[in-house]
Image 1 (cartoon, rainbow, N blue to C red):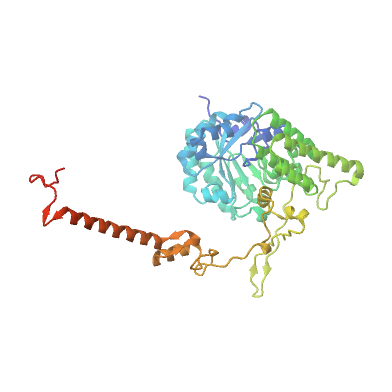
Image 2: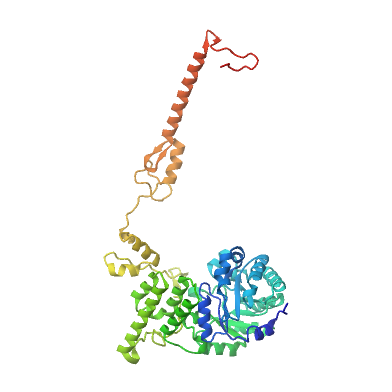
Length: 488
């Protein structure tokens, strides 16, 4: 059995001194995208985050997300798991270790699904559990264990956290310089200062994550923090040639990606669609009809055709507009050039009359059934699908019928309920009062009367049998004196 390399030796030999790293991205860092990124400068890739418990339990999940994607060109490769049970995590690692170069424990996911599942960054306060997980995996599996974390607000706590993981057996640490709460509209700027502090405090390789939009950011980050490598997620999704320092036309990257997808099937259609949405993000803000088309097509050929139409439109703009074509306010390059998407800054809270802050209210888009051309744009994607299935469905709140409220709970009452209640309240009242409500199909009174009638009939029948069975006080049929039963 080969000796398991550790720390810097592992990074230099197994990972080949990788500096440019593609992040683990759920449903987005699949094989085809990894191969495209490697063609354009990426030196190390991670699988999408996999759920350890499902990986252990489901053979199809293992095949679809790792076993079926084995490819010699896709190395070095690190498989990432989310987990919260040491034994389950180790079982998943043992099943995956022969298909990758290391196993990464996700301690950085800040999404609500991670909170509900109790994994990712929501384990960062449970140091005893994390120490046990990393230590057990380091002892049991044949490849190195790595971790990806987010920082605490306090730099000292972040450093202690990193040192604990190193002591437990972590051989490489990726530090995302944002806290648990920095996500979505509140993403903000990642703290390279926290990353620098960790790099200076541990004796294992460190990758930095956060604030990477161009190759110049990568170089600046490595110079300021002293890390061994830099990881990119969103920057890579909008420009897979980021690590080459290039900003090619979007259609070049889109067509090359689609070519890789066709060469290395199968690739889930939703993954391909999501990548095209990211690549064509800025162009789709202008050509909204093709945005709708991209969302609707049902196969790879359809996605390829929409991408082709986007290319033709961009090239037509170039032909007609010359050097000034495609310029959009706020973008450094024409919209058809691969470039980062910068999240809009969230609006400041508004102060109310009492001087306290209240959250800014996000108004819903107005709906107008009279403007049929703009109605579909105003509807959410989910409602647009419903409208496609049922064109006559009314989505305008102002034109929806007003329902009379239940007298007890406030829910809409039954239109013909005898008690003017909703079905739930009506059922309770009808049961208590032994009453009927034809509107809600409740027949407590009818059933009670039927049961009473049946009992009366049964009583009369029993009385007639007793009268017929006795004649002047003697039985009409002889009885066996020994058994006390009627003799037939």
